[in-house]
Image: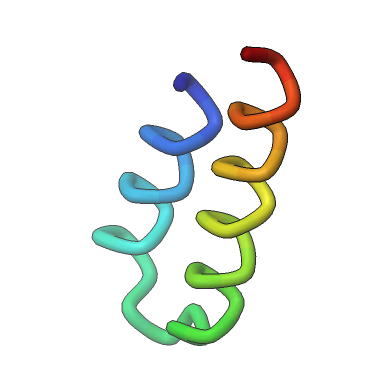
Length: 37
C-alpha cells in the first residue's frame, strides 16, 4: 500500500507526472495484489 501513497504524494507535488503513468502504476499494483490472494 505504501507505493500507492507514494505515487499519490508524488502526483500532488508534481502535477506534470503523466496520468497514464499513474494509471499504469495502479494497474500494476492491483495485479500484484490479486496474485497475493
